[in-house]
Length: 95
Image 1 (cartoon, rainbow, N blue to C red):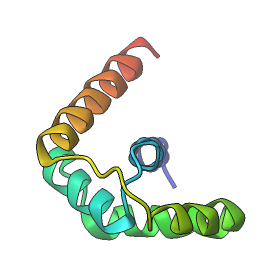
Image 2: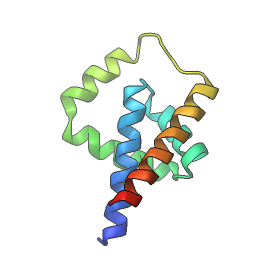
Image 3: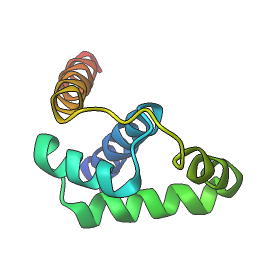
């Protein structure tokens, strides 16, 4: 796999981790990254599934916590994703 592919997957992983911080479900994360970062849902889903395999205990606990409250609004999600993308772009240009 090329450097750019690995970099892209790493970026998707980073964005998924941010979605997790904001307590988004897999479906919400797929939708948000598709809508705001132009990442195909199948890519988000594949990376998410690999993260789940590598971190079973975390995702089991995360799934239980998802049954609770504190969901973000559409506008908050948009602002958060746009900020993550701009931060990631700035970081990549520094490298």
